Length: 127
Image (cartoon, rainbow, N blue to C red; front, side, top):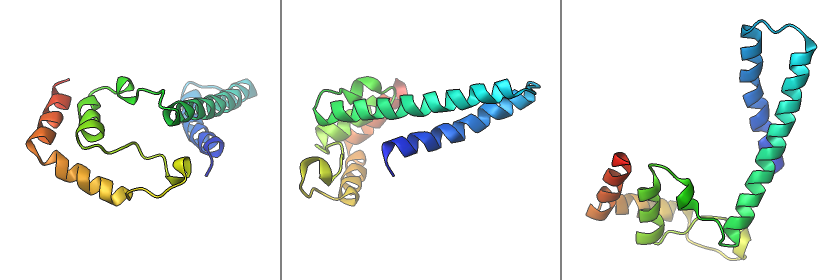
């Protein structure tokens, strides 16, 4: 499924909560539904555009993912830096085969069981 369709699907799902809130607030005209439809389209467009921009920055090495994280930053840094597991963008991004996702998951689980991995978990719980 492409990015745009995923964004449309998420916006459709999210708009159900907005419609429920409007019904609960006693909304009864088509104006409210037209506003929700416009919001839904704007949301889908924004999500697709933002996702594409972030993906482009990530592929170009310009996006600092860790700076966007909250409490999970310590675990993210441990996985990416200490274990050396790269962000998976798929084989299409570089045209070659890489380690499987299953292998990466195994390395992460094994790494988190070490003293350094446990320290990263504790740091994330303290933030």
